Image (tube, rainbow, N blue to C red; front, side):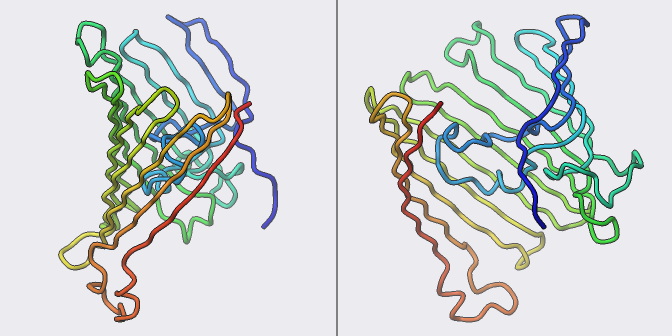
Length: 264
């Protein structure tokens, strides 16, 4: 019911194997996801739906290894799927732990304008910290990419999150496309377009479309200042069972946000 949030608290070790095997023991960031935990490191202030499906951090052991300049891999084991520091009622059985892995490919210079493009794929499978009797197994599959366009001022990104709960038809999918355009020396326009669907079967799935526009303007050094507009649209409002006409009429959400933050 109460406590303190710990984002990272770990011991980092370098094991002299090959190019160097890095080990983190403690609390560490998850190995999947397009958006970072700190909002000022993201192109938009608000989070994508895919981000809300992903775990944020884990308590356990994470190993990372750089196979080559083009390939890096991570693998680990943690107490829980979510950010709880303790396994709680999950117990200590190996079958109740959370397992995570990811791999990142970076395009070499020989690919021309695509050099530096990054493709990342990963999976996280396990339980949350709640009691086993009420908490199903969760499996998240993530694929994301950052792609140069050949135009210096324009970059492209894409992400797909798929969450399956207890190996059933309770699936959630989130697709996001990111565009970043540097309009001048001090300003950048960032756009994110999302399509999200929950559930399966004709007439049973809920679908949403989201559009986020963010203007980033550098007022001063080390200061992040942004204006953002977000529109969320329910694509099948009124089609779900039990949805009233009053609720169905409210199928659009609009938000205007101003942010200013200092980066230390």
